[in-house]
Amino acid sequence: MVKCNDVVMRVTLLQKGTVAGLVYIFDMEGFTLSHIARMHITELRKVLFYLQDGLPMQLVQFHFINADSRLDKLMMIIKPFLKKKLFERMHFHTDPAKTLYEYVPQECMPKEFGGLDRSIRELQDEVRARLNDTSDFIEEDEKRVIDESKRLQKSSRFDHVFGMEGTFKKLELD
Image (cartoon, rainbow, N blue to C red):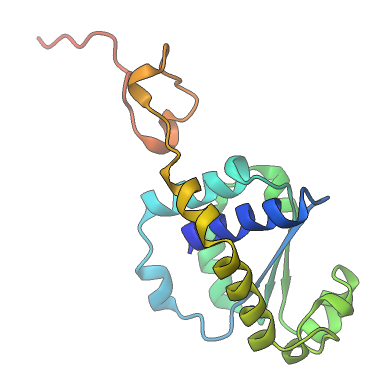
């Protein structure tokens, strides 16, 4: 999911340039407690780090629609890893038709959610077509990687997410 999201964002930047902000809308219909049980905390931390510090666009709003009490359990798990600013940008809607459109223009939402835009299927087809049209760019972009062996100094900024490398200067055992 993260990789797909990243590719779509890079293609969007290529085709449309930068945008003022990004609004995520997650439909929680069908979300169960077994989904929470399958989450690995390490991977969850990395995803949240990416959302907060790695996105090439600013995340301005996060909406969970068709949310119920199960989402409270998920929020208890992820809240310690969220920056206050991102948590404040999260909105929960049990009935999106009543509250979502206070934040998101109805013209931007698919028909299935009471919006005035095209259907989800049509929007998915458009994204697939955009990805197919830029497949050469995507392949070339995937080849670009950082050669960590050339890094002059290790950064400790990300150790809390990606590991404890370099945390201990000396370890003495009695």
